[in-house]
Each structure stands twice: as structure tokens, then as C-alpha cells.
Length: 371
Image (cartoon, rainbow, N blue to C red):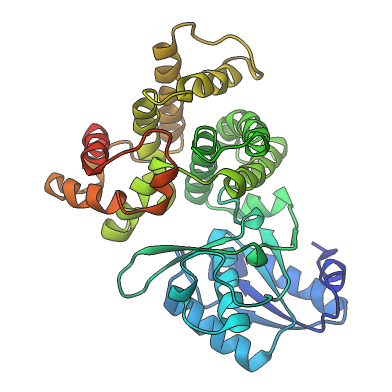
């Protein structure tokens, strides 16, 4: 990433840069290379790496304390979705004050934010192209989606070589998350012609790239497809939001610590089957299924029901190839907790954009199917 310094300079009158990165990325050496590029461009830098997977309000507060002392002109996030989301969270509080809870929702920033650059080292979250930060409340464990157009990164530097150091488990979890982003944005009630264009290209790249990356992790072509596909899926989310699979994954993460990718990958096939009853969803799924059959829009299974089942089965096969759990029972989730999970899912904002409106009972049916 030798061009990172000049990219930072291009943001304006930048002299001091706060770099946000997680310990795993630091250990892989990517952060040091980024910092070196920034320093070579004459920029003063300070690293904040006090965050973990699924950043919480405590992590953001710790980063805020560092930012207040350092007084940066820009923030650069090097890492996966956690680093990028934490960087956005720090920016909200440093630039506008208050607590992270004040920004839960859309358009809550009270003024301009610092310019930011994202250097994703995973292929999955698409956070580099989104104006939302997902931050968990450290007290309640509730995931808060905090979005504002001013929180979007100005630049996203995509380098598929950075993803080669991901552990196989991270490749699996982030990859299935990207797959879910593509298939959920395909059918949401807020989808538009713009989001659909990003979704189709994302799905074309991800549906071909993910199986290849799982089979041959050093396949740079497939790695490139995955990173670009995840980026396009992030752009689709920015224009269309998500659906029930994410609404059902969040409670599993909050209540039982199930990794987000595993939770969303487990729920997605069952949501696809449920959504087939929604107007237009089956036609959209038929198009997506045709792309995995032929590598382009073409003829898949002729019967609509067979199309939906084929697509759901394809997602299940991807999860299996990735070594991810495919039944809730295998995650030690007690069956008698499903009603509480359904009640929580019904309160998730992302679920309101699902093509098929789901009540608590509807969410419970899907959890039961996944059990």
C-alpha cells in the first residue's frame, strides 16, 4: 500500500493521522506497512489498536480518548469490518461529541466529520463503502446501526494481497457475510435500479469466487473477485439496506456469541425459502440462481419452487464447504430460547426491509426451521 500516504495527502490539509487497526492485522504486518507509507509522505501518525471483533461502545470510547489527545486531521482504518466500524464510531464522537448511543439511527451527526480512508484486509463486510457503523452497546450487547452520509470513507484502497493473511476461519466468516449481503440486497423493499446493478455484479463475482477461494486460498484471481464483490455488495447495502437474515443473526451474536458470519450464513437459506412467498422475490432469486448455474444470467431450474430451493441449497453448500455450522442445535442454542430470539429479531431495524413482513411468530418459524 505505498500509495496510502499520497492518498491521505489528497484529502486536504492533512498533517496528523489516527490509524485504527486490530491486533491481528497489526501482527500480520499490514498496519506497519500502512504507517510507513503515511510517514514517508511526511504525516504524523498514531496507532489505536485497542479494539476486538464486533466493536463495542467501550472500544470506541477508548479510541476517542486517544484521538482527543492526538488531535488528528484524518482517520485511516486498516483491517476488517471491526476496524472500519470502530474508526467511524471514533469519528462520530470526536467530531460531534456525545455518546455512541446518540448516533443510533440515520443522519444523527451534528456537523462535519474528519475525512477517512479504509484499507480492508478482509473480503466480506463491505464497510469500506457504507456510511453505517455497527457498534454494540457494551452494557446491553445490542448492535446499534449508526449511519450518516458524512461518516462514509472518502477513499477505499482495495488490495487483494492483504486478504491472503486471513486465517481460513476469517475467510469463511467474511465470505459468507458478503454472500448474504448480495442475496439480501437483491430483494429488500428499498432496492432500486442502482442497488440492483451493484447486487448483480457482486453476486456474479462472489458466487464464482467464494468456492474457488475455499478450494484454493492462494488463488489471487478469486481473491480479487471476492474483495471487489464484497465492495459492490457494500454499495448495494448503502442503497437498499438488508433483510431478515441479518435481523435474525444479530440476536444470536448478542445472546450466544455466535460470530456474525456464521449466524447470518446459517439463517440465510431459511430466509430465502421463507421469502419465496413475497411478491417479486422468487423472480429475483431465479435470476441469481441462473448466474450460479451458468456464470451469467441464463436458464436455471424451470420451476420457481425448484429455483428457490436450488439457491438455498447452494448457500448451504457454501457454508458446509467453509466449515460453518448449519444447524442452531449444533451451536448449543437452547430450543426454549427461540421465542426470545424471535422477539429480539422482530425489533431489529434491518428486518423492516425484508420483502416478506415477519412478525415474532414468523421469525420463530424460521428459527425453528434452522434448528
